[in-house]
Length: 220
Image 1: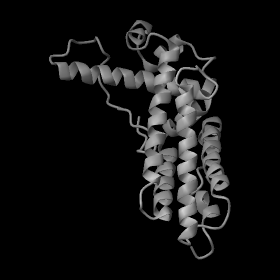
Image 2: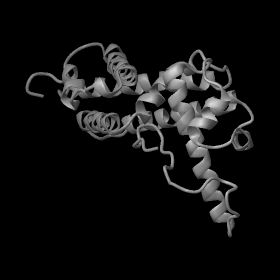
Image 3: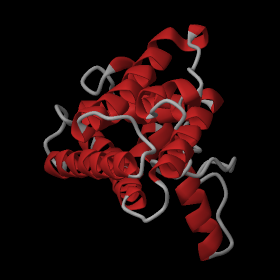
Image 4: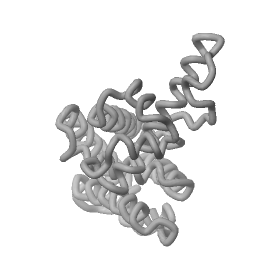
């Protein structure tokens, strides 16, 4: 799974199923183990996004990952545990974005770079869209870790609002309430993620300039 650094990175290595052959070293064993977990995580994220957490069962996840249900249970004791780990990955990625937005770099450069990464991930596959839907589900999903997700999301909105305000002071962004603009910005991305999953091949990702058009003043 490839989601550039806005959210999280998961290995997509094509390796034999764990347990198919005995690894010769601890490193090989760990590589195979990580590859299996990556397949489970990717399969779960797709199913959670398409069907919802409640409508997805463990057997479906194992089937989609191409492994036995017994092997899945060796990695995750429950579906809730798997969901929680995915939400933690996403929350960590959002925290990194918030930190990135607090740098001294030009606000316009930071947001344009971020939007370009979002655009590339959205046109290259479904991983980012699935992850964003999973993040949305986490607000009403298993309670474990829900508070952390809410806190990280709030911090990201605040950091984006501060970035927009600094851009306004520098004359890079159009006038407006920075917090409202930050909420609109992420709501737009979230809505596009949901449309991508629902529309599948009919979805067309808007160009980065369209996603940031509301931010820039004339001639900015």
